[in-house]
Amino acid sequence: MNLSEFNSLMTGKDRHVIVVGAEWCNPCKVLSSNLDELLLKREDFRGRVIKLDVDKEIHLSEDLNIQSVPTIFFLGGGSGERRTGNISVSKIVEFFDG
Image 1: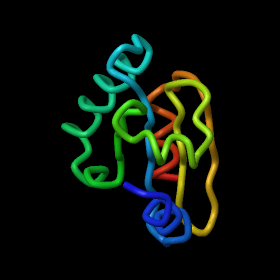
Image 2: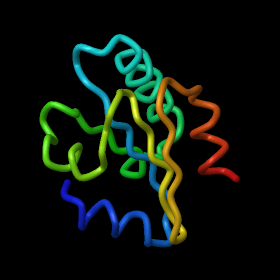
Image 3: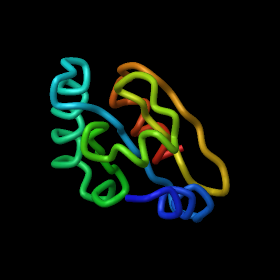
Image 4: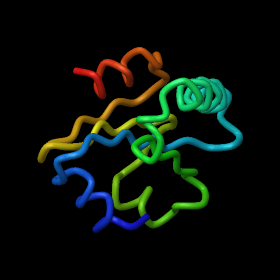
């Protein structure tokens, strides 16, 4: 993913959640596992929850000024919200269903 694609998701009408994490980050591993379970239960979220590795997406991480992981972006409808740190999966469900 590049910055242009990220911005397209932010300005698009569909809601997306971007989770920037790392393989070495324990809170990221927990969140990733919880997201995998959620995606098994809620097929309508597939393709709208995108996980990125900070170490593999170096340019995008720099463009987005990622300072710590996990960093979660809630995008869609022309706006975006950024949260840093682990969050509950219920917040993601709330975002999509709300």
